[in-house]
Length: 154
Ligand code: ZN
Image (cartoon, rainbow, N blue to C red; front, side, top):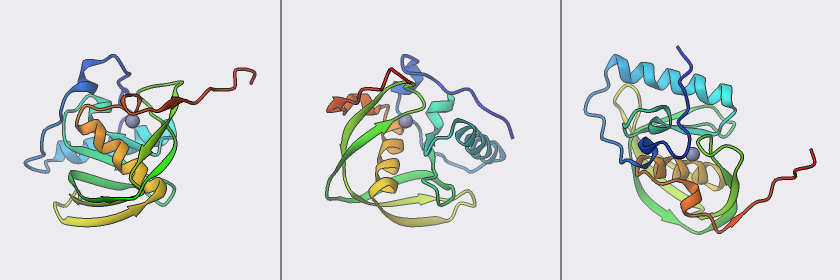
């Protein structure tokens, strides 16, 4: 496994649409392993492949209950609303208030190519929708309603 460099806002790759994974090759498995290692090092709750420079429809999420890997994810249902703070490893030093659905149902493939469906609420739903946006070239700052001020005195 290896740490991959996180692309920062302003890098054009973050604004491109990611492509479907046609085949789960050993390099896709390595990418998943590297993404996990990179996310853990950076203490993130999610990471999408374009954030490490790979335009593939892959993201991982870990809200404290272990890592879930999503390959070719599809949002099947969304419901409700949650309004809360959000940040992103690709937008360091910034946080803002973003409105998201409170519930999502997602279909994706795991690394063995098996399809699974997951229903998520609250933080997990927020993380999934944030990471999914990365695959479409969208960043949370595009949807931010207000900037959350950092306490500068620390
Ligand atoms: Zn992000």
